[in-house]
Image 1: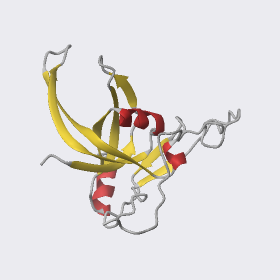
Image 2 (image 1 turned 90 degrees about the vertical axis):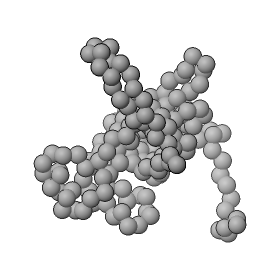
Image 3 (image 1 turned 180 degrees about the vertical axis):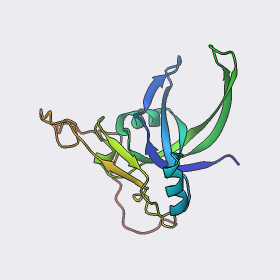
Image 4 (image 1 turned 60 degrees about the horizontal axis):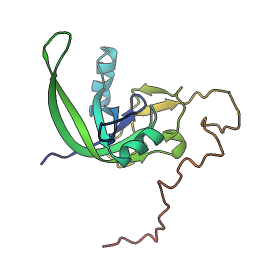
Length: 182
């Protein structure tokens, strides 16, 4: 079985491309905290060793367009998919380069809408403590410091036009009566 589930934050904005057959694909890198004790994490940080893994994610089809549209650097998301390995010849050195990516079947946008619509001036600090024992995904071990431009031309605090309905018809509200359907 080849299944992967990750929760992390985007290292940079997603990059959307189209294949020759007009199939959309979005690529981004997800920073996922390594599970370690507070002491080990402090030791790693003091030795300038990474406390997160940086994993390349590929998303295909309409979901790729949504990722490019709604996710930004620093956005938190959950990715479900499969591991895909590959290789290519480096043009400069001629050496074989091996790759490992996650091909996403599902991407869940976590956090608030404004977090996922953040400005391109979004800063993130790694290194806060993470409680791996609970399922509250908003406690991710990252601290966000939003710094928005003061260019206010009919824009709200998050930096996008307040007349835009940025969720358009891509999302619909589902009524929930609180009952489990099975």
